[in-house]
Figure 1 (cartoon, rainbow, N blue to C red):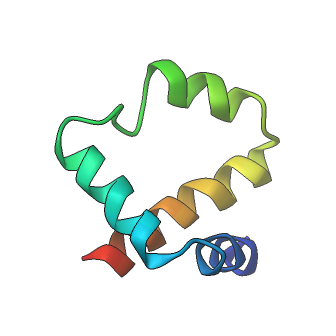
Figure 2 (cartoon, rainbow, N blue to C red):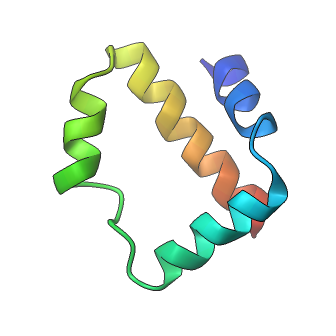
Length: 63
């Protein structure tokens, strides 16, 4: 799962990371609820875990 998460974030340009982090700081959708729950419901447990980890890694990269 860690390898998949890292592969996801390595494919995202720095400019996109900054834009996503800025949008979240302005009151983005948050980590749970609504769209996020619907999106993760479409994934297997392992896929959802990899995407959640990728989000954590993106926050670390932007921070």
